[in-house]
Image (tube, rainbow, N blue to C red):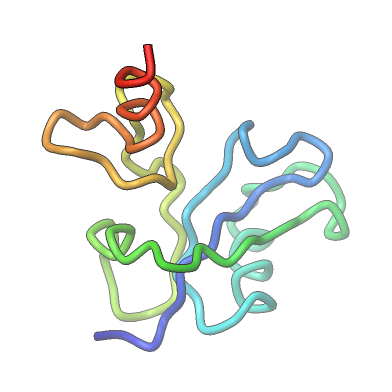
Length: 103
């Protein structure tokens, strides 16, 4: 296993639903720097936000290197087009499956 953690990086002003990226980094500061240096947040440095993705081991499937890096287009759910939740074999996230079962 790796010592890198998974983070969701996004613009505070736009929100995490608008263009969030997946970041593999040692800590939140490193994640913010990676996002900033890759030009992924268009606002000021202060606008760069990261959220630790706890208990999201499935995100490590997207990892392409043992070095800190950014995935600007993580795999998304085919229904809601969001990422971060675990996807089933049909690429549908757990939230969408729960919503379908509730209907």
